[in-house]
Image (cartoon, rainbow, N blue to C red; front, side, top):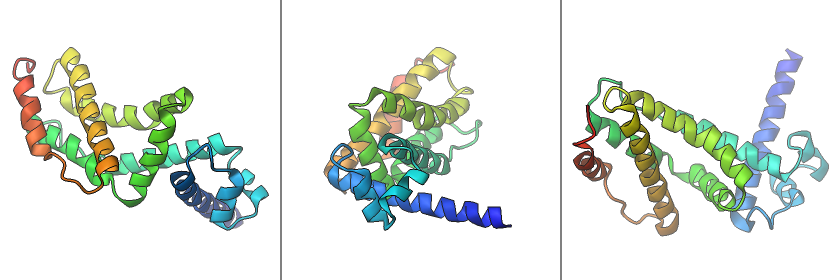
Length: 194
């Protein structure tokens, strides 16, 4: 019982530090922020932050893990027997619907760093993008041959990342509707379907 309570307290403190890191990194940028800044924002002693995260890079990976968990929660694809249009609409709509509040700040922090940090980019690809693409690929398997599926997974991923970037830049500006994008993709897929 005591270890369970200790684990919950440790998890709460770790979440508190992650929340503070997201806010501090979003406000100051990853490189300008210090562990002391994060500790102050979290309301913890500067040394205690190292009980949860070895260094600032480990803290950033903690944010990537949180983003991965959020992405997994947001991924809700239709069943494999759904039609291809519904699959594409859901594959585009789901990540965009998840881009609110904390998730937007998470992505802002991560995006800024993955563009310049190849190690973090690889971690992001492995922990966030690949699981999402794998889930889409499993459903697409019944609709497209392997070669086309890989290409179209990248196309849909690029569209979603582009729309997320557009949302980060333009705020609440209107984005293209997932239905319109799915129809445009389907027009290109007509020759690729089995």
